[in-house]
Length: 447
Image (cartoon, rainbow, N blue to C red; front, side, top):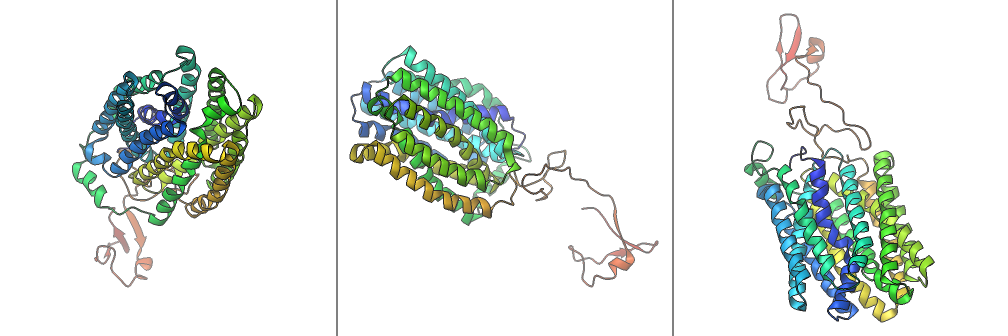
């Protein structure tokens, strides 16, 4: 995908794709109430939605350019609107689950296209923080309005997802189809045959982020139940806490965007993950409004900060965006397992023990995540290839991570003194010896 794809269009598509995961607590809680499901059954339904989303990402990791970003984005938004709309209008458990899975596949498709476009930006970290900022703001607004518009039932949250997908549809006009020199079918097809760069770092990051996301969303999927059952709060109060928490998350995202590459990625990723572990343990032990709000707000402030650096790290590994999509899909896979794991642990050992187990897991995961961030710390946070003003790539001439991109200056002609040329005993890169000019200089023509 061309790096010239407008950032607002990418942000809108990212928001539509990620929104379902942000609304997971209210989706799972309302499915249990309206369809009379057990917490484990409702968690399984939420997991099915997110698993379908992850499947779409894995399927499209290297195929977005070949299919065409515009066509893929529109197909994803259409599936999301139809699937979530069907789930909103139905009261049959099989039909609701089927609609949720179709909608989840559409969300995953939209996220894959957005991740590919973000990886092609000059600064993927900033692009990903804008996407997280947008989805956090929208989710916070929905957490404030949904309980007041409808105190129960699963229709309204699913309808919100469907309406969001339709609202983002006009933005797809800004995406390109596979045509032209930068998006030709041959170039798109070659992406399928090109080996993934930095295979070990990318594979390690993808494997660890599955468990990282699972631990996060094991608690997120049952947070509503912790607030209403263990802490004794009303759904309106819990929704207000979530809205404030997501608002704090906006501040975290803004801070991450302002901080950017001024610090090494290992610090926010490693230390942030350890801090999140403490927040999860606190939230899982909540017995009132104070502890519940403290844990949820602190957690949601830190989570998007760490996630934005993880997404930026994945985007820096491959300018075609394949690692960005694969790592994002791995995150969705872990997110998909979260509600089922969280509800099963909660029923088996209780919320406090569940929180302690998840916190311990995150502390252990902070070590390999920090190692990957340190290993790739010298790589740029943008798309790996500098470009001339015309947009044509000029090779892998990129500044170190954290420095601004410098313009590429072409020198015509480049002349080397003959005394320097005589020091070379082999031919040049084309196998042709330098030609001596009448002035005693060996000249080379610009390539």
